[in-house]
Picture 1 (cartoon, rainbow, N blue to C red):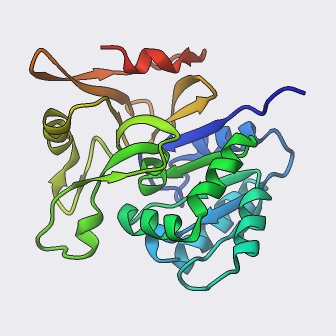
Picture 2 (picture 1 turned 135 degrees about the vertical axis):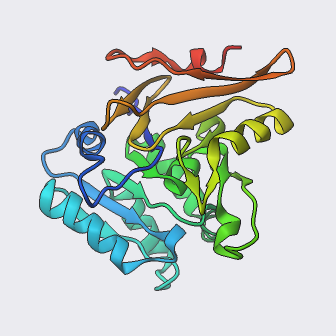
Picture 3 (picture 1 turned 30 degrees about the horizontal axis):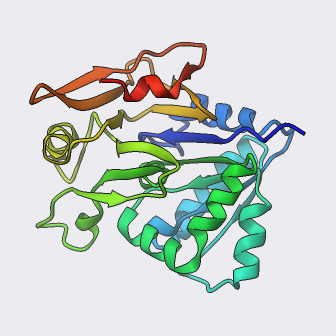
Length: 253
């Protein structure tokens, strides 16, 4: 029996409730390869926002035809059995944006990180936006500190699950509370090194086993590799192609 394809869709940002991410969302559903896939929403990064869940249910459930469910980890205290059943029973797991640092700490404490790895290996489509995009990488450029002190904060590098290599920056073409992402992420890569994978709003990268491709919901949205070469930081656009490309090419200098 063939091994399940491991699937991740990392979305840089955008507004789902107005339909701005529709092309990307439809691709996520297509990857599940089911007529009415079961989509589980994890709103941990927004401290289990009920409003966020309302919009996810309305969009993916009522509009796009998924069977939707939510896993609250802060608002409620589900048993380890319930957490396991929900995560391993889903066809799609969608992680919302928000406080990446808080989310990762809680996931590790509750063993959600290990269950997500099992789901990924079983062929569940893992996806998400912003914090829900950072979490799949080794680490990511995060505005988590702005949730603790909105008036005085800095972007930080938060450790993710490590299913994908690299340092990820969502919202590459925008800012948080007026602080631009692009310049600070370049400064971060200059300082810590590694390969940066930066994604604009309305853009995503889908990773299928050892291949990838860039997908967008708006023509101007792009994805980039950001890395140091000969003491200079280079931002190089990742080409958008119909066909899948080997992931190894993302990390070549």
